[in-house]
Length: 223
Image (cartoon, rainbow, N blue to C red; front, side):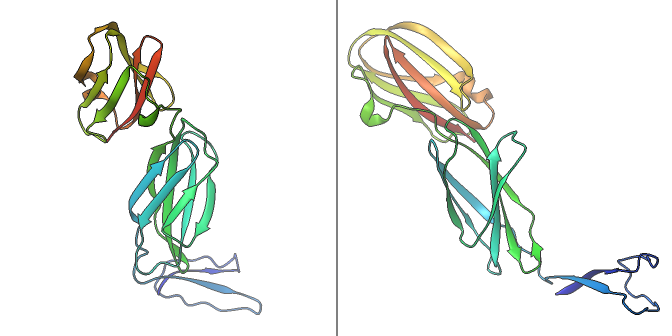
């Protein structure tokens, strides 16, 4: 540990707290408090990985060798208050989250009397989606690729029969961002690129494929 600063209880004596040396006359009952911190800086957590579902999120990170514990906190984006705990492990499962909601997550390393800066990540809980095993009869093998992506989003799907088919894109909060009016598509395999996706900011998006009354949904992640 190395010396950081000192404080004195006698408020009438108030020189520079960070001076390398001081000369003072002590009176009975005066207290001096010295503050120290680790000589090696408290290292940051790294490589945060998040797997979010509708109401839960499994989160892990790489911890430094000299940790004692971690401070972990999370909240919906824009909320005033954090949920915060001290934690001993490098992986945690958050429960009781709101579906279809953007969250902020922060974690910092606690080393003795010092705490590192907090490392921040964001994630979005799932909205109600249709899984591959639940796809409607006429829409099959619907996939989004590459996923996650840093550029364009591509779609691929099979139709078991011809029909009017439309596409819509919504944000993680449900806002409609783009849609293609229904058009007649033949039965068979279809591939297309969402050119608009190159302009999307990083985040989570939901791609809706609708054929008449049937709807299939896929989640896309833009990095």
